[in-house]
Amino acid sequence: MYALNPEHVKSAFSSGELSDNGEPVQFRTVEIGRVVVTTGHLAVGDPFIDPEQHPFTQKVPNGEHPVSLAVARFKSLDERVAFARVKLSDEPAVRWEMALCAGQDAATLKPKQFFGFGVDSGTGAFMDPRAGELLAQKMDEDEDYFELMVEQMQETYDYTRSWLDCRPYPEYAENVVCFSTGWGDGTYPSFFGFSADGSPCELLTDCLLLKA
Image (cartoon, rainbow, N blue to C red; front, side, top):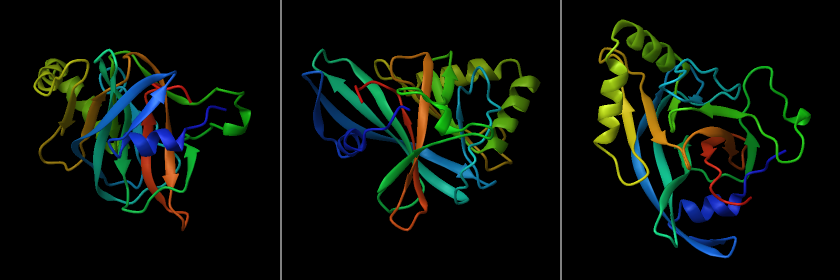
């Protein structure tokens, strides 16, 4: 089973530097919004291709939770999103578990395998599952909404990446926080971090930029 490297995460979100295959990688953190949770669950997926994602089985606190990106800068000056994170509390993570949906069993995975979400638009998103339903409904009602989201992501564009905090309906609190994924399309795993008392304190998507 693929395992998250906690030292990479620590360096990434402390604007640190590490060596990846002998190449220096410098990180910086970008705050991109707050995801609203109303059902006690979170989901991650490609908002343009399949907004109605299955939620993770792990329960999370309702409320507004900050979302940030750890952007990696390579020697080539190329910059990419290495990790995307939802902070569920101020407590640090002392252990990590792969984020699973109903019917998934981590014990069935072989070395380096993982359960993850597919990306075909170069974009992932954190959302309450209710927000995914609202986004799918909005796209059905308004055939131009897809293009509007693309235009809004261009407003935050910085070479190789962009982001968007999208609320499909102003009258509903639920939103979808979108972000560019690493090298683009692919499949990416997510992990829950747990604090010393066993509570979930963050949800993290690994964009697989770094060697584990």
